[in-house]
Image (tube, rainbow, N blue to C red; front, side, top):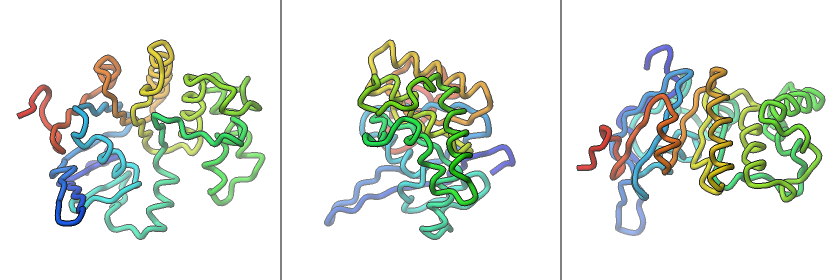
Length: 231
């Protein structure tokens, strides 16, 4: 891993065992994402994209292989250390928004910092307002998720992902639940976030959005393959 890498995977394999059946979800994946890069991951359904994102986000562990995240060997961490690294280094944006319905927009955005030591309630609030302004949602700070459109909820989810100043932003089908107009709006916002220096890794099935990234990674049958090669 060079000094500019945020993510480096070497020979990462993931095998799911159900009874006597083994399913190879990932097969010896090598992947590097450098600081400030915007990478899109595409491929057919069942090719391993979601499994790869779960491992990148420390939501799951590889069966074998090496994973280094911002200089830290993930495969050597204890569960508690993994949780801390995930909290500090990774921001998530999901297809389903995953906002908490009985919290206001401001409270939803503040939430990741509630688990950080040394951050006062006032600082959490100030930082939440700052990132909401960044995504154009300060006027909705006192509203609840159900009062927002899908596009607005995804903007809030992006603000929540950014508040912890993560080393990398992982976006898993961020436009999957949106119509074309709102999808384009969210993608424009992601591009704006990237232009300020954020590192982004995005899974998408939409070739229009994949093409907006600096680099496209193609997956097929659990492996990273050259562009257009599926054999």
